[in-house]
Image (cartoon, rainbow, N blue to C red; front, side, top):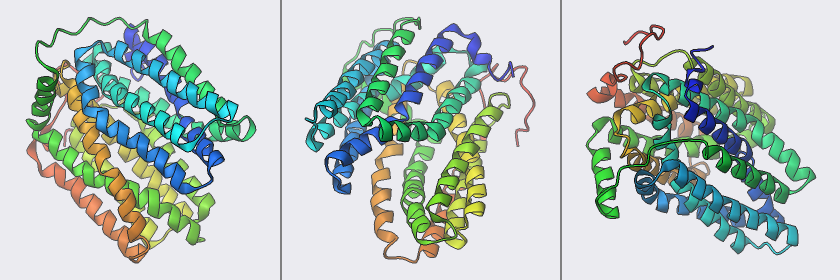
Length: 414
């Protein structure tokens, strides 16, 4: 247990972890609050789609710029500044809802501000973690953050639903803004050296980040693979899954809720395991594990019984967490710290850019193609692409940096 919590020995990480945990807990309620706020103004799915799309587009557009800023300026300061912007945008949403002045265009505009702010926070978050802990504690640090994230994914929507139903979405936004305010204070306790002056232009730094990204075969090959994998995941799991749940009594809407909970439980359990069990070959194990998502996809098409799909989803959730932790650790160890946020922004851009395409494509395909053929075919493609990345030598051979696994429990390399 002490090994699993080893990252908490680092003072800076303790304060960062507490700040991040608070924002994850309060932020896990925001999507539900925003959704019901929009639907309370205009009970039309198109209005909600507009607001969510605007948020995503603003996030994608500003991601690569956020990476450069996070490498040029103190990362804690970048995060704090963005939290101030978030407090203002979320607080304005709440004020508009309280006064009855909220409209869909106004909420969309404020969602765009929030999405753009998030584009600066995410690369800064990725770059700051290696500054707060040692290579030996890096896997534990990522697993601890994943534990809180997965726990809030399970419990946050439940709490948000209760608050929205009893107090209204505006009060949920007030809680979120308060969480951000507390996080700003906690991040002030994080002491890091100022980054070295860049000495180059903003766009030259942008090109340098691209060179660092594209010069590593293991990185761009997995990112290209995940453009397709994420499109399949969000389309087959996020669109086709609920459609089948609604129309097949073997699964049902209630059963689908259990399936999603089982996936979250798989993630949660694996984070606890990864706090003490080291991944000596993080990319090899990660790509092998994430291919397990093909199992529940195929099960949805072949035999969508709630119990069996939930079991498969538990295994898949555990596999996704192995990949996430292995990928984050590899990125943080292999990329120079002064360029990490820029490289992470390109990674995030590749991960997000095809997801809207997957949503639209599967939304159309599910009405045109036999669901069994669609989902089984998607599962096969998913498994082949995920496992195929392991044929790349740098993916297969990638290990941990020297000294990162000293005194760690043994785990076979092959």
